[in-house]
Amino acid sequence: MRYWGGRCAISGVVEPALLRASHAKPWRDCTDAERLDVHNGLLLAAHLDAAFDAGLIGIGPDGEVLVSERLGDVERRVLGVLPPGLAIVVRNGQRPYFEWHRMNVFTK
Image (cartoon, rainbow, N blue to C red):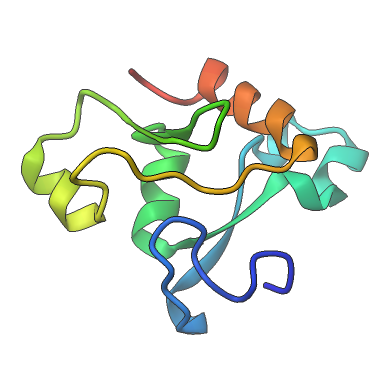
């Protein structure tokens, strides 16, 4: 919560009951060190966390929010990722985790 300023990295939602600690590289695929690495974490609203875990959204190298072609306009609108061009601030320590997610989870 503190690392992300208590708000969803994508939508800006601040209500704690609606936020989830997401991991770019899932715990089942992590080493013990990666599980505890703050850079592997991402604070997301619950609906965006579900989309991220399902590979329907991802984070590009420069922080752009990537959206799977599987999502239509209705889903994009509901998720709040329409219109395109959303981005988050990506710190260097996060880059390898977001890259892992793009290569292993995100579905183009």
